[in-house]
Image (tube, rainbow, N blue to C red; front, side):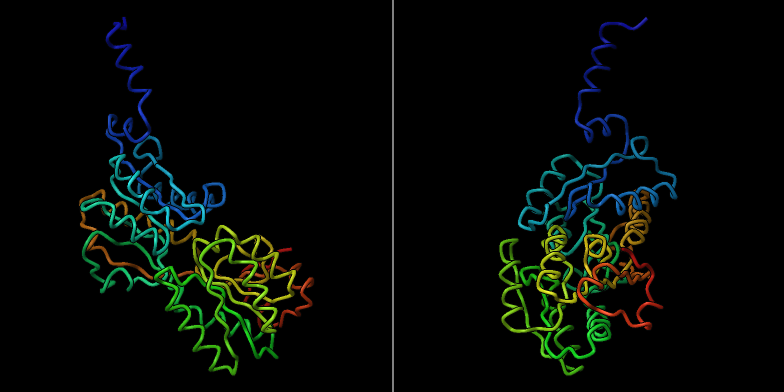
Length: 323
């Protein structure tokens, strides 16, 4: 027979916050520090869950997740990271350079696993032995920017001027600009930097591109761009600018073409880093890994609307073409 004391204990435990309840049950607590809302990040989070299952971890049995999103405002990352630290998280899994840096600075002890940092050398000096509290995976965004310029040139052979949409307040993006500027000039293309810091800067940036009569546009990978991907794709259509992006989400939102890493694969692989940390390995001893899967996505409806004829060479390389 259940005593009154036992009943009160049970009711009290059920009223705890998820992380506190996990602590009471001996579960691990994982904080996800993200750039976008969960609904927009479902494929990546599910890939992480899959990776955890591959190592024998079942959500809400062996671990619980606390999800925090900056919703496109990178200045919120420090506050959100502090919230996760306050919940006594065992490890923070963060996407991107600003989120990873905020997570690392929020605590002196909590390990940080980055799922997709564009330029890892902004955060660590040695990928094989990163030291400190950071490990995870890089999306090598900066290294891939030259390839994106080349693909855009295939789509727009007569391109002589292009715009590059970046947020230079993101510490990874100045290197992206250097890579793209160099690649463009090597192909005889004059690059125009469009530096945006907030959502209100996006529409004026497109007006500046129109005044400069650029032939095409490349968009960097940043929190601000991710959250406003649909708006950016719509403006690219309005101004009839063939545009290349860094990930498939933009193409799904109506963008023309993307080339980059397979982000769900990075999230799945991040689970192996979390598993090692749970088993006692120091994060600084776990190498930061490079991507192994890349993908080229096309939106054929967007191509028709822009009057862009996709070359056969690009069609044959595409991993997916959507309407």
